[in-house]
Amino acid sequence: MEKSQNWNDWRWQLRNRIRTPEGIKSYFKNLTEDELKGLETTVREFPIATTPYYLSLADREDPNCPIRKQIVPTYSEINPNKQVYCDPNALNEEEEIAHLTHRYPDRALITFTTMCPVYCRHCMRKRKVGKPERVISEEEFKPIYDYIKKNSQIREVLISGGDPLVLSNEKLFHYVEKLKSIDHIEVVRIGTRTPVILPQRFYDEDLLKFLEKYSPIWIVTHFNHPKEITKEVETAIRNIRKTGNPVLNQTVLLKGINDNPTILEELFRKLLKIGVKPYYLFHCDPIYGVVHFRTSIEEGLKIYARLRGRLSGLAQPIYALDLPEGKGKVPLCPQYLLKKVGNRYYFRNYLGEVIVYEL
Image (cartoon, rainbow, N blue to C red; front, side):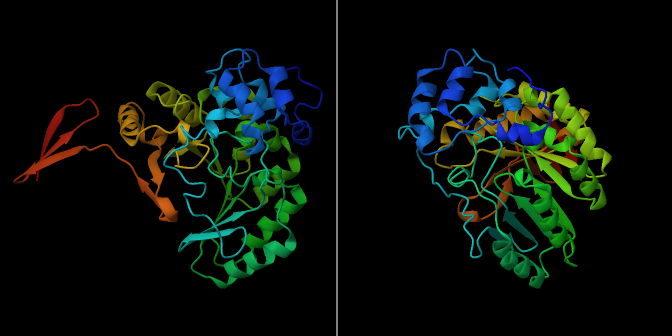
């Protein structure tokens, strides 16, 4: 894709998102039958959009390109033969107060918008995003603010969406300042994929000055493949880190995209190299429209076990899944303790050797 003189302007990137089947068809060659049918049917249920920047990372000819698979809709997303054992709202994020989820005692999540720069095909909130694109109003924010302010057990607020970094600086700064002003709020997190799909957002000097002023704000992003780590991304992460704010990453284990220990090892090493801590490796949720991206838990554990001992603790995320009906996250771990005989414990190490540990 040709780069215009406005390529590094995040507002230009948002204004020029590719949002139609025709736009996708004009970029990619050799579209598969699944992709062509998805562009005719799936888009009626799940919208499409991608930034020019993120689209430029995709291979025009290879249908197995990991970026392409996250951009191009397929019929598999609505195929009843593939979307089985799933639920549009399996994570039970519906709210008593609109746009507020208070699942854990000390944490609350606010969805500030239904808009994203890119509508990822594996999105766990695809029943909501882009339908329509909107940002919460001051009137909608007030009951959320009042609830959090009155509930002193809430210590941490996660700002999410959609992607909250699509908000104007004015709105984003206003809402974050209000939350930061609450005495018992100790941590503010922003969950955003913009470092991956719109890194130019972090070239904005006003945003960077704000992040520095209110540091620490924890930036939690979402890289799924090493191909997503580019020079533009390195610049964006460097800019964030200069403001004194930490950056974490949540990866989703996705069939055909990153369900390979070599790919994940490369991803986690590259993230650590640019100053991003791999935080979670999530098992793909049983959400309608996403099930075809799921591996089995057994496959996920085998992949995770292969990473053990090959990556330092800094590069090791927690492999976890979200339980149904909003019952929370649980870590998934390979079995290293095999048995206990008397005061002897038998462990399997990362090489597969059985080691005796005595107490």
